[in-house]
Amino acid sequence: MPSVGVVLGAGGIVGAAYHAGVLAALAEAGFDARDADLIVGTSAGAAVGATLRAGFPAADLAARNLGEPISDTAAAIIGITGDPPALDLRPRPFSRAPLPSSPKLLFRSARHPTKALIGLLPTGTITTDIIGERISLMYGNRTWPDLPLWVCAVDLEHGKRVVFGRDAPDPSIGLAVQASSSIPGFFRPVEHDHRRYVDGGAHSPTNADLVAEALFDVVVIVSPMSATRLAHRSLIPNARPMHARRLANEVNRIRRAGTHVLTFQPTPDVVLAMGRNSMDPSRRAATTTAALVSARKRLSDPRVAARLGLLREASKA
Image (tube, rainbow, N blue to C red; front, side, top):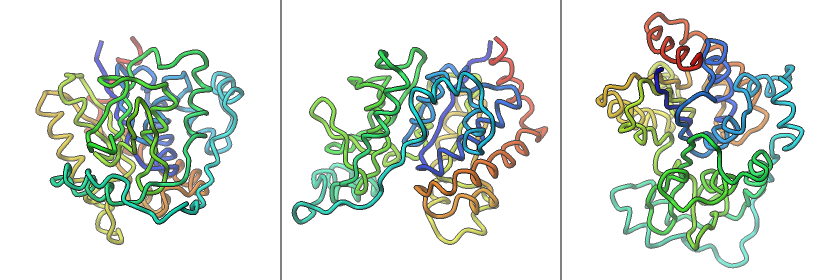
């Protein structure tokens, strides 16, 4: 039986909608992401990964965004959790003059400009409690999924990537997803075991390098924050090309280990549907639709047939 790793990257509310379209297209093609031997999730991808590990069918992620009928399994979970969390994104006033959230991080992360910048940003004021609460409701009395799920966050003091579910003192699954989703300077850091954590995307939008040494037969990577080369030509300058380069380096590392990799990145039409605000809930339906179309086209390409065959075989086992 082929072994499969699934990597779900960061991307906010719109990124989660992109995941929904891609994962639904994969389900149509014969691969259910719930069958993966390992799911690695960052930020939005952590929430989607936790939802899959709770038993929510991948196809229903898209159906729900599009207002279409959903399965009884999905309806039962929604009956427990309610609708997607409506985050109040209005900035909160500072009780005092804003100070850098972690000045030490500037020196400890001199070789990682993104992390150094995070240390200089003021501490975010918007709570993400509703995210953690909703995920916790899915799991009831369980503190962590039964199947492997790695949730990526960043230690705000040291700048180190922390992988909950693998090598860290694990909080509850709800708190882990909440920490992974806490965008620096915007959302309030999440505290656990006397440490403060922020969005795992501060280290990498996908953290796909984590699966390089796992020696899977095939790895699926869904990367909402990057874009295909064709999309780069039509983009107003933004960070997508930079994220695509980082993803390419991670993919090369995985392939050097002999693993097949199937990546999904937004195409020009998808980028247009996603817009420039990753936290805009009004973009959910359009993004999911565009992602479905784009992913279906990719999966119909004869060049991915062998990788898709491995995924189908894994789901049948």
